[in-house]
Image 1 (cartoon, each protein chain N blue to C red):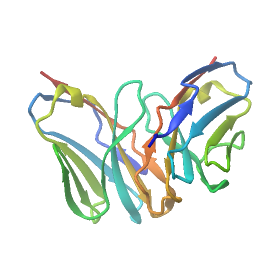
Image 2: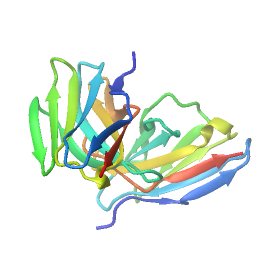
Image 3: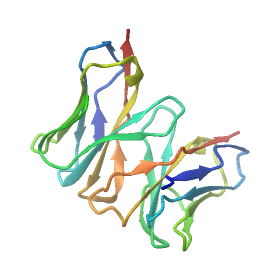
Image 4: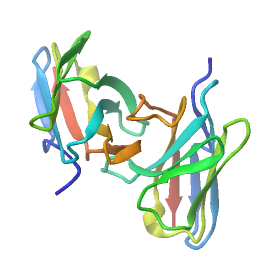
Length: 112
Length: 115
């Protein structure tokens, strides 16, 4: 079982729709959860982090965490073509003290 | 306040050669972490340096080594390069070793191609 697993892509949504990206993790002791956006040929850019169960909103982005289910998600409202990128879920803490464990990424395409 | 800077941006090496990648940490940050990202994969943790000492290592062979200097900048050295070492190498700095995981901000990366 992979330590961090993301929903297989690619994911394609129309402009203005909600894009939903999902991630599960295996280390129950994980404490910190991050979403990165990566454009082709560029380095990952941090867009959200969440530490507590529930929702965290920042503009058009909402991160959701459910530690009991070992599940974290990212919702992007009013998706724009500029949101087209690979989204990486990363987890830290527990047995991975001091390092991030990344999923394989989900490619999102927002079409006009 | 400057962010994390990496050099060079691109590098082409031949199998068996050695390479050194450099990272300047963000001002005030004392911890540097290195990651390898192969094409189509998520980044993989190589190691972390905290106050000039290695502080955690991922599943990478000893030919991957590093240094951190008193100004907290860092080097990643890879000996006996293999074709599979071709990847984007990412550096991130943070204040302290990150505990459960302080948000990491990456530099622009070094794209290494081994032929």
